[in-house]
Length: 370
Image (cartoon, rainbow, N blue to C red; front, side, top):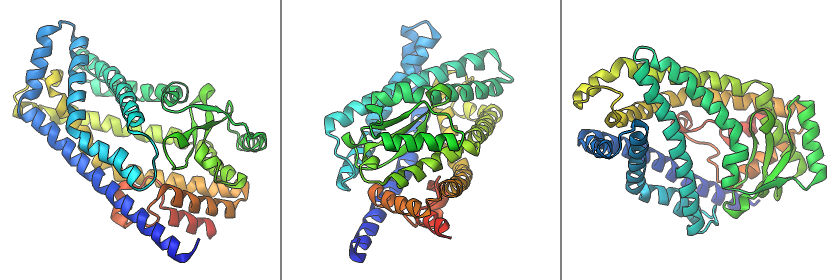
């Protein structure tokens, strides 16, 4: 690639990333404002009262309330969501998804999110009502258990709703990947290829599932443009996460974070309930307060989670290069990923602090070359 072409691509990636950062910040602030207004205006009480007047079963009331809140939120955030996930991706030539297909994916994603929310919040209110003193401990345990089950089911239930994938037809590459898995003591059921190109021009590869659902998933956009060595070292990085126990460590950190968040709600929510004239956290009209807590606590804890994640990523890079010996292939793969995905190769420290759960591409290349 000529220097001038590289500079054009660099500037394009910077513009794309800047818009994404701005949208992420705007959406977070906008969501907090909407939740506050929803609670402060009393609209949440009105909706809860209307639904309670129609249905007697508390779980049906909660399900309908969440559905109403989801629909209202989707309508109010639609312009930002549409620009971020459709217009922006097309503007920077990263997507070729039609408007119809985009909207169908939106319906699917929101339906999944709704079902998960009903389950998690249904258990939340059930435990909250029966264990007023230690509900935060029990809910933490359930949510962590549920997240593990969800991770196990994702490659066999959720991913097929959005993509089609099949066993990798390239037998030579498949054998190399399976041999690498054996070498790194990683058990997988097989290697699959996913039709990413139907929706996006970005590239990715993943190591999805737990136990008997654990598998390698290669985007066809990656397989088409990357050498065997590049694909192998990318997957060695993914396998290294397993070898180094990063999944279990992230579950541990997630458990601690969830427990602390729920405990803080347990100890301090009484003040906010009084401010908004609510008698108990178990009142579904108080649900916006719970969401506000999690968003604010998420903002506070995100930098630490990012730091831990970046440390794990660096360790996985190091192990992948050491085991495969494919240092040059790793560097060329990083260059291609940066170009294909319009990655911000060298963000400002404040951006890295808040947004990056992986080390920036330039940093990963520099460490690989040293």
